[in-house]
Figure 1 (tube, rainbow, N blue to C red):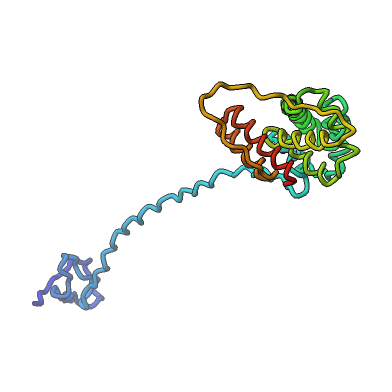
Figure 2 (cartoon, rainbow, N blue to C red):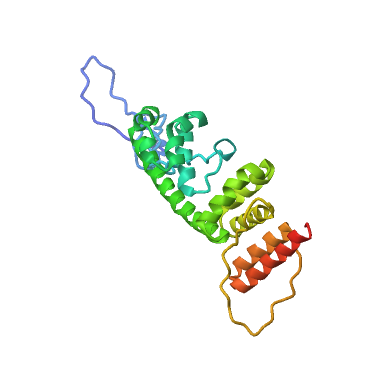
Length: 278
C-alpha cells in the first residue's frame, strides 16, 4: 500500500521550483513502527542483545600441601658398630653414627669410660668438639644410663656365677686355674655363656668346675647344694646326657619354673655323661 504524505516544509522562493510532495512507501517500514526516512525504506538496526553475564569463575583453592614429614632416624648399622644388647646403648652408637664419627673415633672417646664403668673417664671436651654441645650432653647422658644398666646386669650375673660355683672363693680358684689349663677355644665358648647369665652361665661354671676337679693337683670343690624339697614321688632314674642335651634341658626347666629337685636331676645326668666321656 502506498500513501502520499505531504510533509510541511519551508515555502520556496518564487524563483524556486514548485513544491512536489515526497512519496514514502509505508510498506517498507519495519513492523516495530519505526518510520522510514526514504522511499527505499528503512532497515531497522538489529536489536543489540544484552550480553549475558559470564559465569563467575570459581576461585581456585590451592591444594593443601601434605605436612612435611620429619626425617626418619637412621638405623644403627650393626654390621659396623655391633650390638650392645641395650636399647640405650644402641641409641648412643646411633647418635655417634649420625654425627659422622668412625668407630675408631668413638672408641677413643668412650671406650675407657664404658669399660671401666666410670663416665668421668670420657673426654667431654673432645666429644663436644666432635658432635656439638647438645649432642654431646645427650650422648653422655645415654652413656651413663648404659653404664648403670651394665653394672646392675653384671652384678646379677656375678652373684649367679658365685652361687653356681659354691662360693666366690671357689669361682676365683676355678677361673684362675682355667686361664692356664683350659684351651683358648673352650674359653671362647664359655665366656659368652657366662656373660649371658642364666642357665647358660650356670652350665659354663659347672663345666669349668668339673674340669678343675678332674685335675689331681686340685682339691675338689663342691657347688652349692640344691635346696632339698620333700616329695613323695621318686626321682626319675638317672641317665647320661651330653653337654648340648644338658644346656637344652636346663634352659627348658628354667623357662617353666622347674623345681630345684628337677634341676639337680638334670645336673646329675650331666655328671653321668661326663663320667662316660660324652
